[in-house]
Image (cartoon, rainbow, N blue to C red):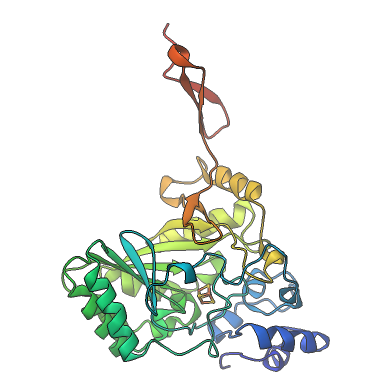
Length: 351
Ligand code: SF4
């Protein structure tokens, strides 16, 4: 099997019924589609609600755009001073090298910007200007390569960019966001891992993984190659209806990440990307799920639940909250809730 890129190929592999093909042609005309074999093989054809299929197989529901949905839901464009750079927070920038991904997630927050028909990889001239921007802004402490997916680039090109960045004195940390280790684990070769490691600057790799079944043996081995090389691995997951919105699946995912030496970092609330309402939960559901993790699972397994505020205002943690301030003036104190839901006054009342 090769990477599936058209509704006809999805039909041929029993991933969508033939009667849906026409509607899916309209989806594919609007949003990029690609499903590599490593993920296609995980899908249970007999399960109409398969969580892997829900993430990657195009769905006619994507044609239903809600009024509140936005083409640029996290406001990248408003913070892009030069091509390829997003400078939203003072001490860090995104560097987008390519609009290509190994797999196109149906809920992608950059779905209007990623795909083979959404421009080209950053040209040598544009990259030089982006690097000049980073060099001339001494407050930039961290550079985050994102996309598209930077790990679809050749090891040679990636190494060249990583070394340029490592050579900038004030840039102290390099971070790469990717889905390649689960989508195409064989791409994570020893050469690619060497390209990610640069002298004198730590590399963090943030892996986008939403369901424990994505961590196949091959994916785990790809992650291990990076961890063994000294790369710090972080987990980023998107909360998705019908994929990971139960305490059992979310807990299993967080534990599987930690077992693979991937520290859960963020659980993202689903962004208001166009045509993704069928995959979003509400925030109260997300908070209940976070409560289900707290206390039941090790502290290592706790991500921060965040919302990217529409309009480019950045991420904020969205609870749940365990601390409330109460009383006034001299009687002011806190009430803190434990993982069993019991409330305690802090500081405790004097005896
Ligand atoms: S890998 Fe990331 S950028 Fe690419 S489609 Fe999935 S969520 Fe979007």
